[in-house]
Image 1 (cartoon, helix red, strand yellow):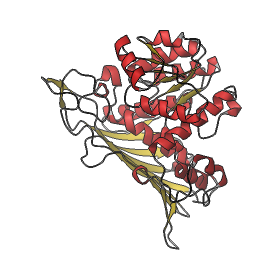
Image 2: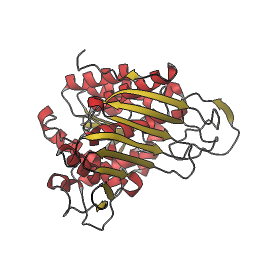
Image 3: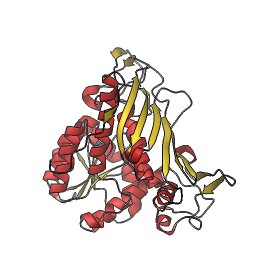
Length: 385
């Protein structure tokens, strides 16, 4: 494995790959030779490259993890696909639907594994809930709702590339974490979001940058700061219409004090409701109208047989964010070992198709808000069109 873009999430990619036990992390590429060498030493990686093309050209690298800022996803991933490398990309896959479709089509044409790290799919109780819905145990789904709330951008002195449309894209909070929520909602419910009505807000329109490169969840260094006017949303609420007439809604924000990584998703079926909270990820709430509510603990002896492979410890032993991330990476490498054949892809695994779809969902929300708050359809084109 070779990794390009050693920022915040890169350490978790490296950790997950090393947990596999049979994949070597052989190279890191950064924005300069010096930064790459520093990160290579930090992560105990042998080779450091000052540009991504050198890493892609390394014959010992078979799989490339792209964890760069959003604006670099397209050129780097296209170059990796052209070289016949398998690609695991951080989300969002691309800056907009046009780029997402281009990457999806290129990956399918290259016949390599192509994965987007919508890592919350890797939580065993997410898969438990998904299976319950698919088997009809929740009854027909009527409502899907929740939120994804954070506070790491509450301080105006926090400024990162995510606030710069040229580097992060037109959307900030929706593209960054709203994409996670929407993917999870579709994955758990088995339903597609058909149209949206969005209200976007910029709570902190002026931020102050030191000029340093700020990673997620960190403050920049001290020193003189430059006033930066931001227009991308840091708070949004969206009404949803799923296929088959199912309704939904969610809110997303990154300027809400006290909310660290507060992702919550609830599905209400005719028979029961299912609610999962990321910060309490070892529990699944099951609500019923004709009998007592229940909380299902993450316990492989109680869960569905097909979900047990995503648990690593017995009941009562807590599993975490990094374990869910590992589950996605493990499925990715299982697919790679199987020759990246379409019919060999693990069912849970999110691909560039899902990444492209996510860009289309976010784009519909941006169009809805720009039009003054009117419903907009999610437009995704089939592969090759």
